[in-house]
Length: 92
Image 1 (cartoon, rainbow, N blue to C red):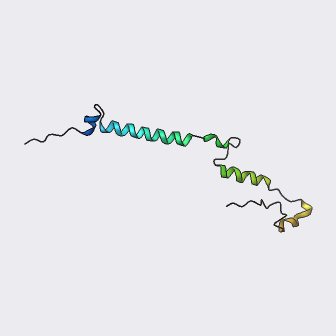
Image 2: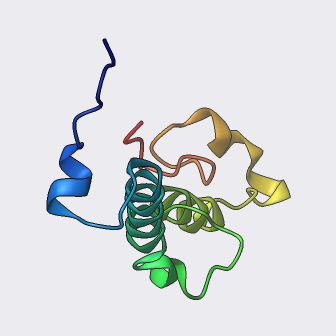
Image 3: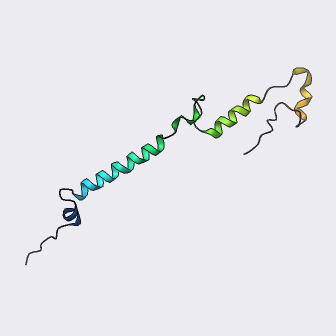
């Protein structure tokens, strides 16, 4: 008694396409789609080439607002409302 292999679905519906080739094609398709979605809109941080995320850009803009107090008025550091070290912005 000999066993005969039945033709696979790939051979029946897609002649010439082996399961290995189909898997490789699907893998390339998924990686290509993922790469396209990842690279879409990469230029959202124009003007700030060193910031990888918009949240970090917002933080850097508020850090620029912080300045040291004048030497003759160091007491303002102890007043939270008037202190130049208080960015008045704490979303985190």
